[in-house]
Amino acid sequence: MEHIDWTSLFEIEAKLVTSAHPDSSQLLLARLEKQQNSRQSSPRASLSAPDDICTIPLDQLEHQVNTYESAIPGISSSPVSQKDLSFWSAAMVSFNDCATRIPHYSCDMVRGGVPPALRGDIWKSMAYTSGGDCGSSEDIASLKYLYDSLANEWTPYVKIIGRDLHRTFPEIDLFREQEGKGQIMMGKVLRAYSAYDMQVGYCQGLTFLVGPLLLHMDDCDAFCVLVKLLENYDLRSMFAADMAGLHLKMFQFESLLEQQLPEIHAHLKSLNINTIYASQWFMSLFAVTCPLPMLVRIYDLMFLEGVTETLMRTAMAILKRNKYNILNMTEEEDVLQHLLGRRLWDVYGGDGDLLASDITSAHLGSPDVLTQLEHEYETMLEERRRVKDLAKEMKDVTPLPKSRSPKRFFSQGWSLSSLRVPGDRSASVSTNSDRSTRSVSGSGASMVSVDTEIMSQVDYASSVSSFDMSPTAGKTEAAVAALELELQQLRKELEQEKQERKKDREVVGAYIKGVAAEDGSLDMLKSQFGEASSSALSYEDLMMQLAESKTNEALAKQQIEDLRDELSQMGLSKDTLMVPKTTAKHSKKESGTWLKW
Image (tube, rainbow, N blue to C red; front, side, top):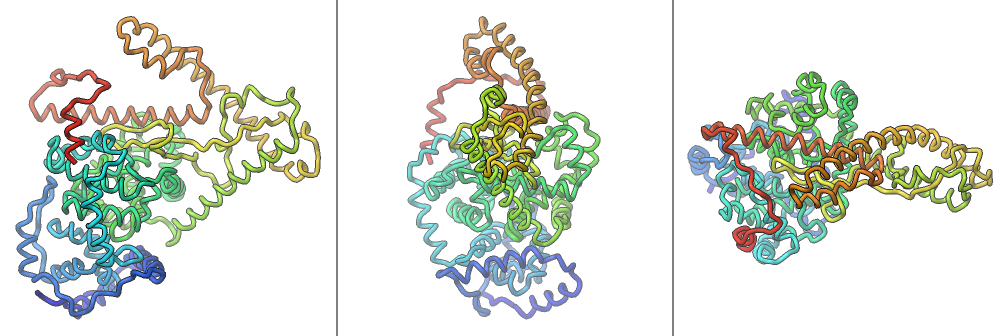
């Protein structure tokens, strides 16, 4: 065993401090400060590793690096210098110590790419020392002990997890085989986590977090790292029942897109494309379409500098790199297909170094811009609650004459949450796998459920003069006037949308009637779409449904293209592809897969 040569590492750090960009380690230092504040209040906080701690001998580490064969196609080992091996050996023992003592050197090394042979150990070291308890050995040992029992515990999510296993990284040998080692390990990890955190349980998209971990470590370690990722990297709120973390990230992304890439933002807005496409990116950490050799570089940066920061910078980087491709597209369908498909990453040509460089150089604004946007988002939510309470108060204090209330307008289930509140840059989008939802899925994508915040339906007069000018009403006159202006505009938009949707439903209804005689199973479609005379949905629901449908279509087309490419490589024609009939019941073989883990 060898001791860490801190003297040599400090010398390299001193050289980098004088030459590095001032912002090069800013995010890492901010994360360390946050950890330190959390650690001071943690009774389990551990101290830094002692200077004389032993590491793996460098010659043994060098042999491990040079002989490693990655499970990810396209990743190969390259020689690592003795100087760099000295750093990685120290980082494997305690990355927190390296980040605290030599932050510039730590950032420089991780941004340059963790050696594939050491990536699993480095990820574990970064994750285990990411929280307030600083990765105490007791904490990790407790998680490993829990895993053995939780992995065999029944949860309500067993069958749902089983259905998603084969959709995750099917191009990788480890996960390709049904009932194979990879799928069984992934099922055990997800099952254990669903039992460990019953408030989160299982949410589609977690498979894409676990997959890259299992390519670099065993299932027990993957479970421990998953727990640390969700708890210490602000990911848990994104997968919780109310998906509050996803709402916040979508708001931050919309704001940053408008500030940093105004041309792209304006172009997408002109095509009526909202930011729902980014939910696929964030829920899967870009794993749905990003090639794995580049995805692991994103993971390196997330463990180093934080998930939210890396997600936002990655989103800005790939949009900026695809700027001219996007601006040259004039059809909404083409843009969505590009944003949600694998071609989005073609601009990098598989160059992970170029992607990492784009991400680390992406500028988000001021150092605390994400915190500022979080406060702005909270203020916006508070304002919405205030408007809701105000509307309820006005209804209780001043009943409106029935003859003046636009009852027909509100009978369609209109949501006051769609009224634009100062500071609201985007529609409130919620995802929830437990409530009644509509989903965005395809090409193995995580199913993203969309829900909208429904506020009280309140009848308003068509003119402010119809209100009784009581003291209470007088105080809210300005607010009512503003709402009236919004309502007048929204009435026009709703009427136009209702007419368009009516025509669409008539077409669908006619189609269903025309083919129902040939296929009785289409009665189910009739019940889903309804008759042509069915009442229209709310404008807000229809707009969200339209966005989801177009996203689904883009994903489906991407999947078709992938299948065609696979058939071409196999020397088969597209006519060879047979589409099996779907059945409501699962086969015994599938059931056996679920039971194995």
